[in-house]
Length: 97
Image 1 (spheres, helix red, strand yellow):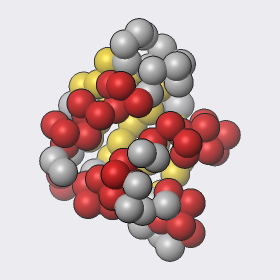
Image 2 (tube, helix red, strand yellow; image 1 turned 180 degrees about the vertical axis):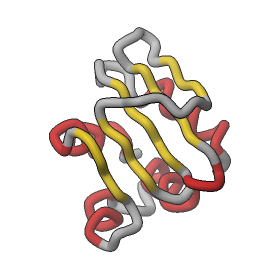
Image 3 (cartoon, one colour; image 1 turned 30 degrees about the vertical axis):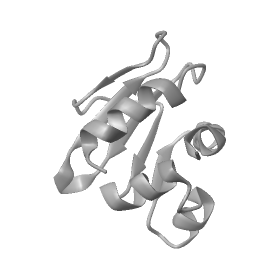
Image 4 (cartoon, one colour; image 1 turned 135 degrees about the vertical axis):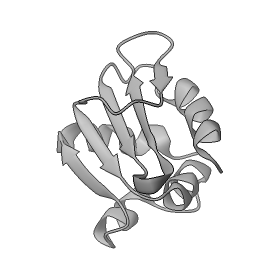
């Protein structure tokens, strides 16, 4: 799954999130999601967000497909969270397939 596939999936999955999110895929790029708008706006820009998730494209793709539990990825160090942990927990159920 590439960054464009992830952006497309996020536009539908994050409706109702009502917050901002940054996904940092390190050398593979960054996605900023403004879910305060309906539908959520997903752009490839590095902006400040209420919660930031840092992970690889591979791991995040597995989270979206349901092949990787986000809680387990966090505990194993494959997913790092900065910003609001409460929002990260809210994202948990929205991201899983």
